[in-house]
Image (cartoon, rainbow, N blue to C red; front, side, top):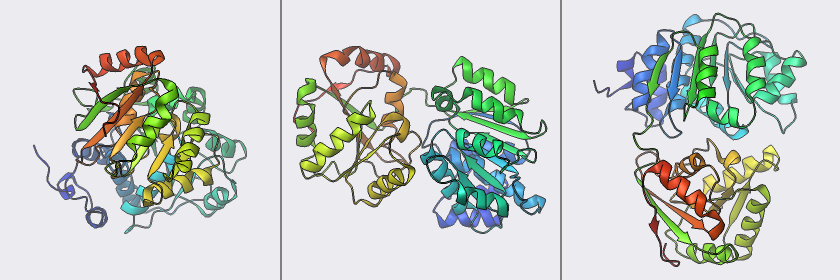
Length: 378
């Protein structure tokens, strides 16, 4: 059955109004399949990549259920906890809560490391309904008794596969152990390896399973090309490609933090406004870089995989893999930064002789050969 409006899913009028104000009128497949189950209080296992609308799929029903209970936010004791692997994703989820909950009296705070904890502690002291957190800072505040988890009624693990990739398995289990046994739990992951399946088995009770992963692992609207080029000539190739104004909003991926800095500096010297984002930068610097790219002040964002995971910026025309990832799954996540919300996009990959094995792994995973590009093609 096709659902054409959020009201058909049981979403309340104030939330429908907020969604309409953002021009979200027709639910995406994951929203149509997830929201009714969550409004009924069921646990959920969601398999979905970024760009599918999954944030609204879990934020909207949580906001509705919190509002229906008509309880006041309590000091240090959030009623909903959303865990995210990166600071950037946590901030984006917090922004979504503010947008969707604009007509509701729901308080939230975003809790992450790399910045002073004082504003986060102040928000917890005033009382919040929803905490959006990265695991490390949450455990820090838990150990200092600035937050209690015994009142959590709703738990969300977003991008659980990336959290395990980043080594958060032990932290997640510590956090889950501090939660009430009676709660509604949601786990979202782009992939379902055995360790995620095991974690889901520990956390969820008779969950509804919603799988909106594509039948083929790559985004089909993305035109994918590979440039065979020596590593010493990659910088010159990148500069030449960016001479084409059609590459108007570009994310360039490198494997390392130092590589991201070097590429951004090279582009700046060539007169191309670029920002770098990676784990060594402070949170404020990362947010400034993202805002510069989002506003169009910077044409290029140079990023590492971990820093870019979960970034949702519309209008990215091209993704350039300056260095191919050594894990084929990361390639899929990278190119998913473009061709969002129905748009098309282009992914260009630079492959030097040492990276041929990485390319073979990507082509095996995606089930397609990348088109070989002329060196000067855009």
